[in-house]
Length: 416
Image (tube, rainbow, N blue to C red):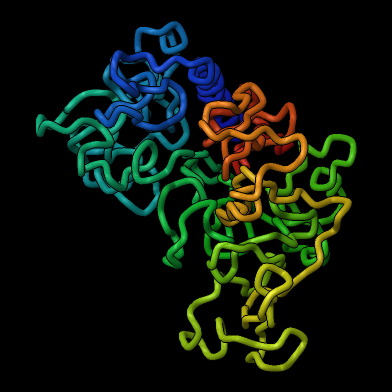
């Protein structure tokens, strides 16, 4: 089952990588002012179909002769059938749900059109959400149809849709890549502090859903990002020989000390990602949490900590414990990067009206940055979104055609 999952992931990752290369080379494919960018997982021109399914893209060489990937919500081979409804996926694990018999055939607790294997995929359930057609003739196509608003992938607010199949479970969209706020805390997927990467299958805790992950006797001392228990392979989280391939997300060190905007005021605080750590509510919503405090004092309730705003400012009570990152193994949150918990450095820290740091190109027109070096214009300065040689991404399908890569805080990182 795991080999089948990796094969499926590899096939679609290959397509994503090729299409991203086409997109970055400047192909907007259509005659409109913006047009469809053919490899970013987004409906750029707002007409419903995404990437290869859009008429502006489907005749391009990278979109032709693709095999059907069985769990990405798209009609990869343009035959009108999506995922499990395509005969190419007959017999694939997780594709054994009959969508019309009133029975939960695959044993996932839901039957027929309530099953993710059917809704938005099988035409007997209405609009098929990834085939480029208006199946129910209501004038809206694919993700532009209200029927597809919460169908993931390819709609439902998720641009990733990474597939998980841990512990013998049937392949399914990972909890941290499904576009759903699974734990109802107001934060979705990788913007949730509990999600270490899109391959994390538990949005409600700092476990990842991988059997045994970080649950051993060394669980609170080892790297939380390596997908297992024990410190034996923690070197993948502190790769001194090739820091760009560390598994640690942007903004974190190998022990889970991360820079996050815990009190959501635009600046980042270094706190440990563990225990009851959550974004801080307004003062008065939960005892002293979110209320002012004296750093080093005893103003906060039990199990709360006084965190200095922006690491040096006024204190506020939080369930997150402040920490000092391991400088040798910290993947710092640099300007222009997307970092853990959705944090990005504020403009004031990235140049703004104060000019750009030495060696950083100014971009007053917004067009001066080097796309080949994955630079973006942030606060008037060109900053790289990923380390040199590391491919930027918005979803794991953008990464190289190797199932050992995942999109972690905007960069393609090897997870093997």
